[in-house]
Image 1 (cartoon, rainbow, N blue to C red):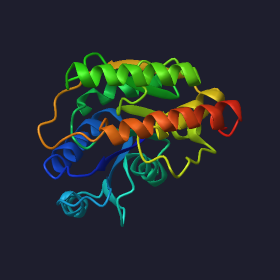
Image 2: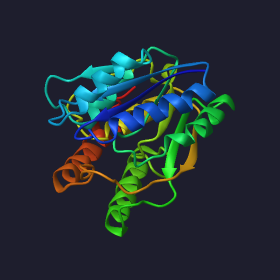
Image 3: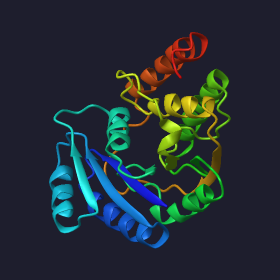
Image 4: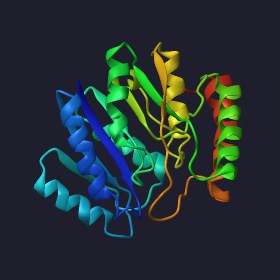
Length: 236
């Protein structure tokens, strides 16, 4: 199996190097070939600079730079577009997910899965974030019938063929882009498998996933996606 692994980086200067190096080490043991892609979403800190230094030292590491901040969703899309291999895996740049669990996702893919979706057995940020996530996942499942416990979990492995023809709506700047991608993949017959993954607290910085602004936009995108994507058939 050949895997393109990427992660968005925004204010992640403390974790870019350890995450990229650990992923490189893990994937070297469980894949035939791999690459590491760091998507610098116009980070105001040294994330992009550090990533460039890593790329100079390791030819398996590449960097995609956004000239301006485009948001998490578009950073994910840039990582998918940059992938050179048949499988694409990704996580967040803050190291809340343990990439040493990647071999389990690879094993599930070898067993016939087209998409391997992680789900957090316990969310590290406490009950408020856990409650918000459960409400969001319940709403997404009710609207799109994906049957996923944790659609926003940023630890996934996807066969690129499952995303063939997928072009996301450009206004999705948050994680809702993953709903659109998985909805299309399921409609095209992709086999989706879920695996429990560990989740830990951030050591550096603050999460931007469920700020009030992001929560509002996720709610709006869910409602819009239901009408445009499902009722009107705007998503393939």
